[in-house]
Amino acid sequence: MTTYATPVPQDVVEQSRTLTRFPTAVHRDHALCLEAAHKIRGDFLSKVDVELNAKTIGDYPVLGPVHVVAFTIPECLPERLAIMTRFTDFTIMSDGRPANIMLKKT
Image (cartoon, rainbow, N blue to C red; front, side, top):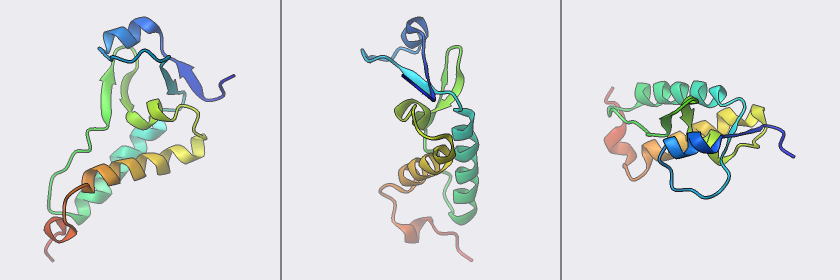
């Protein structure tokens, strides 16, 4: 039994051109992920001198914009979605980039 996951209809999965054969679900409160992703991006860009995009938000048929965390952890407690999203985006945005190159010069 699911608590927070909403099954994604198979026709929507097929429209998204995914190759998965697993049942697909999205967190019912996936908008919380979008809010957190936009906040971390703003926070990150205010500290670094590089325009970065984590590319973790996709536009899906019927669902609209959805963050990858809403798909990968569809049973996450709602109060943990923001921190999981921020962690994911921060890790991806700073992956492989030395901090001394990214920091803004003051």
